[in-house]
Image (cartoon, rainbow, N blue to C red; front, side):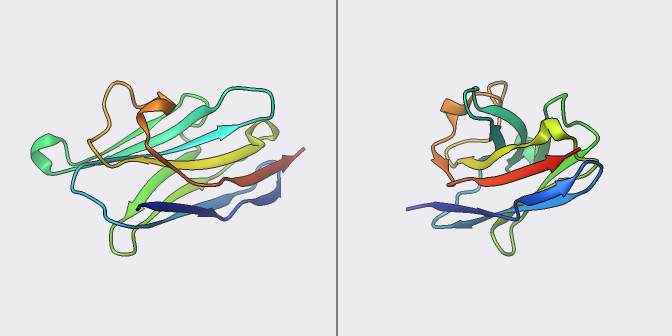
Length: 132
């Protein structure tokens, strides 16, 4: 059974930075898609970024970003310790949300990387609050 556990959330002032971690346990295959979503109460879950991990002949490692965070956030994955990260810089009050990590262990990311239903494992979430 795969388990995802987020950490690193907290409160920060606008312009500040946070680094979220998603520790992964369980069996992980060679072709996977990992993602960060966020959700504000009363709104739909929003994709932030995804990272596709696979052999070079299927694209290797590919990152995807939502326009709202492009240039400010960076997604990465460390295979050595099975942890995914989200480096968040120049945070804005509108970045305030519960952040979730997710994974699809069946295939690499594709055109549907923004669709929450394609991810079959989710973490419990970590709160990020950005004050103005």
